[in-house]
Length: 185
Ligand SMILES: [Zn+2]
Figure 1 (cartoon, helix red, strand yellow):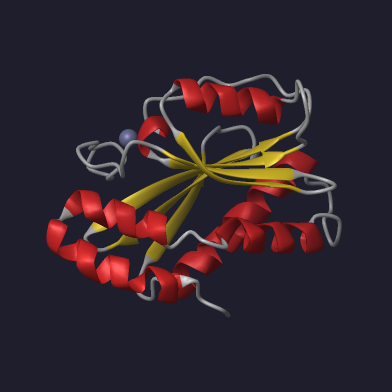
Figure 2 (tube, protein in one colour):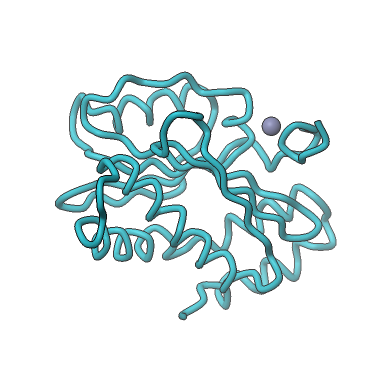
């Protein structure tokens, strides 16, 4: 598996001495090519070998699966914990990446064109977010992007494919100081 780190590696080496905030930057510096890789994986698995999973959940599950694989090849030794954000569906998932000394919280939202828009939670603002869904004017994908922008997240990358779109967002920081996210509730 090709690892995107070499370009970011010098940045990481430099960043470590600056402590926590720079660790967050290290993750940022190495997301080059991430969405492209996720897009390829999702496109080749979206319509094969599924029993009854709805499309939005398939999108979210596939994005998270590839993100987990990318993390473990980019950051050997990192551990990932997945869970569902909503108890009744798998359309919105989370992935917590523990890569000492920091943890990154990632939310993955699978969105159909006319899905209702969900509020951005207090945890979302200190997370990475991947939107995956039907793009285009007026779509839930576009409205969710507006919500994230209003909440102060920054779009790092976006891919518009023929059957679905992806975007990657960065919150203000990793869940530093959020006991709930760090599992110390
Ligand atoms: Zn939190």
